[in-house]
Image (cartoon, rainbow, N blue to C red; front, side, top):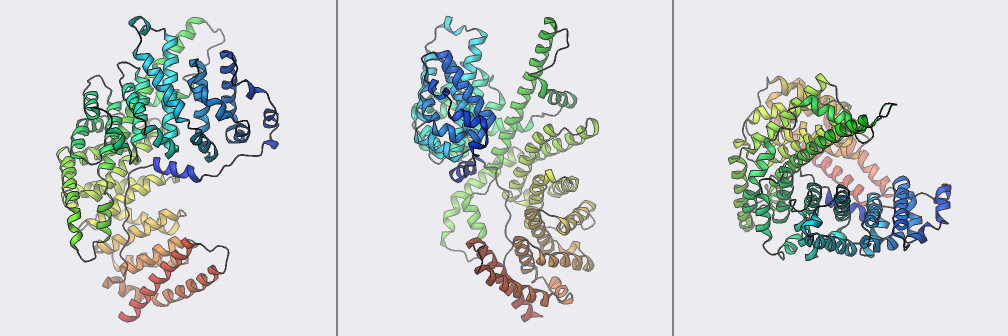
Length: 640
C-alpha cells in the first residue's frame, strides 16, 4: 500500500521563483497601432533629445519618458526597444547632473516593475550593473570626502541625496530579485559590496538610506549560493556586522534585516544562532497592536496624507497646520510600518531556522526502507538540529510565536468589534498572520511533539482559527492552519479527546468543505487531512460517521479534477489496511466501484494518448491513479 504523502510547511521563498519566472515570462505587449498616442510617439523626436547638452532639457525629456512608462506600462516597450531607449539611458546613470540621474533611475525602476523578459534580457546584455556600481561608488566616495561645512546641507539638498540613493538601492534590489545575471554581477563586485557595507552606517547617511541599503543587503544574500565566497573577500566582515548590531541607537527593524542576511549567508551555523538571538527575541516580543484606535485612524488617513483638500479660504496658516499634521501622521505610520516589516522578517528568519533541510527530508522519505551505512552522513545534521532545538527551547520561541498568533487574532476581533474591518489594513496584517502560521507549521515538523509545549491547547486554538475562516480571500490562511493540524495529527502518538467540542466542529467543517469546496488544492489538502485523522485518530469516529466520511470521499472519484481523484484513491490505499475501514468498505460494496473506475481510467488513458492533450505530466498522473487503483483492487480481492 502507498504511504500517505507528507505535506510540508515551507518558508516563504519568493525571490528564487521570481528570478526563474522572468526567464520564461512571455512578452505581453499590445499592438501599438491600436493606440494613437503610441503611433505618434513612435515618430516623435523626443528620443533624440535624451543626450541633449542642456541638463534641464535632459531631465525634462527623461522624466517625460518615465511618465510614459508609468501610464502605458508594457504597451510602450516595443517603441522603447525600437528606439534603443535602454541603451541611450544607461550613460545617464552616471550623468554629471544628480537630477538627471534620479530621472534615469526612475525610468529603469518602472521598466523593471513591468517584469518583461525582453527588457530584462536587454538590461543584462547591456550590463546595466556597471554604470550603477560606478554611480554608487563615486557618490559614496564624494560623501566621505566632504568637509564639515559641506556636510551642513540645506533641507532640499538632503532630500535630493535621499531620493537619489534610496531609488538607486531599490533599483539594485529589484534587478537582483528579477535577474540571476544581475545578482551574480553585483555580488561578484567586491567594490560594490564594500560600498554597500559603508552605506549601512546610518550615522553617516539618513535612516531612509540605511534602511534601503539593509533591505538591498538582504535581497542580494537571499537564495544566493555564491554570496559566502564573495563576502569572504571583505576584510573583517563578521566583526563589522557584530559592531553594527551592537549600536544601541540602531533601530530594531534594521537589526532584524541584518540578522536575516547573516542567516542567508551562513545558514544554521551555531555562531549565527547566537548572533541573531537577542534581536529575534526582542522583535518577537514587540507588540505592534496596543493602540488600536490610533493605528486604525492612521491607516484610514494614509490615502489622503499627501493630498489633503483645504477649504476654499485657502489661508496659509491652515495649509501649514494641515501639512504639519499630515507629516506627523505620515512619520508615525512609516515608523510603524518599518517595525512591522522588521517583525515580519524576524518571523521569516525563525521559519527558516525551523525548516527541515534537504537531508532531513530525504531521510524522512526513506524512513520505511532498510537502514544502510549512509546513516553516518546525517550525524553532523543531527548535532546541528540539536543546537537549533536548544536555541528554540531555551528562548521559549515556540511560546513566543503562539503569543504573536494570539495577539493578531485578538486584534482582528477587537478591530471588527469596534471599527469594522478595513480591507487595506486587514490585508497587511494577514500577511504577518500567514507568516506566523508558516513558522508554527515548521515548528510542529521540526520539534519532537512530545516536547512541544501545550500541544493540545495549541492545536485546539489553530482548529478554532480554521472554524473562523469563511472568506474565500482568506483561503491561504486556512490552508496554512490546516497544515499545522495535519502535522500534529500525523506525528502525535497520543489520542485526542473525542469529546472535544472544537475538534468535533472542526471535523464537521472539514467534511462539509470536502463536499462543497470548489478549490482544487484545498479539496486535496482536506481529503489528505481527513485520511490522516482516520488513520491515526480513528477512535474519535463512530461507525455511522465513518461510513458517511467514506461515502463522501468515494464520491470524489467522479470529480472532474484528476488531482482530486488521485488524492481520493491515495486516501483509500492508505486506509484499506485498517481492519475497521476495510470491513466498512466491504459493507458499502466499494469493490465494484473501484473496478468501474479502473475501467474508466484505462479508457480515458487510451483516448488521451490519441489526443492533442497528451503531456508527460498528465500521463504520469494517469499511471499513478491506475497503479493505485489496481493495488486497491488486488488487496480487496485477496482479503475480502
